[in-house]
Structure formats: structure tokens, C-alpha cells
Image 1 (cartoon, rainbow, N blue to C red):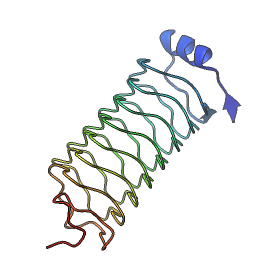
Image 2: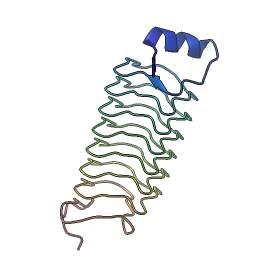
Image 3: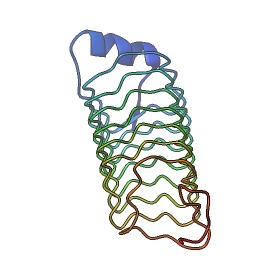
Length: 177
């Protein structure tokens, strides 16, 4: 897997290139960088630093964002199908209308995230925190919410999701009443 530096990625993007699949971008610092429409499918961005970056309408399928810092990142309409976002920080991230089908979000922090109209079907959210997240219109069928904290989440329709006694519901209860 080819390694690409922050400078080379930004320069190529500014020159009009959008295809950056299958790259090693681990630990890259892309703070407040506008990369709308970039293709990073299957790329490794483990431990990357991307707060306030704009990755809206990007192809991020099967990308590895394990432990990445994505707080306040714009991921509007991004395709994160089967992406690894385990242990990622997505506090206040804009994932509105994004596709996170079958994504691994185990232990991720999505507190205050905007997930309106997002597709989270079959996503693994075990142990994730979605405190005060907006899930209005989000698709959660067959999502794994065991151990997930949904306290004060808005619009969560979890009837078709997998929950257990460790799931904290939006009302703060551990057992669905």
C-alpha cells in the first residue's frame, strides 16, 4: 500500500485529482482541509487527525478510520459503507444523509453527531456513544446497539435494531419499558 504525505495529497487534490483509493494515510493531519468529493475507498486513515475537515459527498467505502479524530468533521452524504470507524471520535460530526451500512462503529463516540437520514442498517454500534445525537429519519434496521448509549438521542427508531440490557435508551433507561 502506497504511503502519501499530507502535502502531496493536498497538492494533488488542488490540482484536480480525486482518486486516492488504497493508500496508506495513517496518522495524517488534515485539520480543517476541504476535500469534498474525494475518493478514499479502502484507504488506511488509522489515527488520522481530521477535525473540521470537509469530506462531504466523498467515497470512503471500506476505509479504515480506526481511532481517527473526526470531531466536527463534515461527512454529509459521504459513503462510508463497511468503513472501520471503531474507537473513532465523531463528536458533533455531520453525517447527515450518509451511508454507513455495515460500518464498524464499535466504541465510537458520536455524541451530538448529526445522523439525520443516515443509513446505519446492519452497522455495528456496540459500545458506541450517541448521547444527544440526532437520528431523525436514520435507518437502523439490524444495527447492533448492544452496550450503546443513546441517552437524549433525538428521533432514534430502534425497534428493528439489536438491543440488550446494556443498551441505554434515549430516556436513560437500560430496559425498554
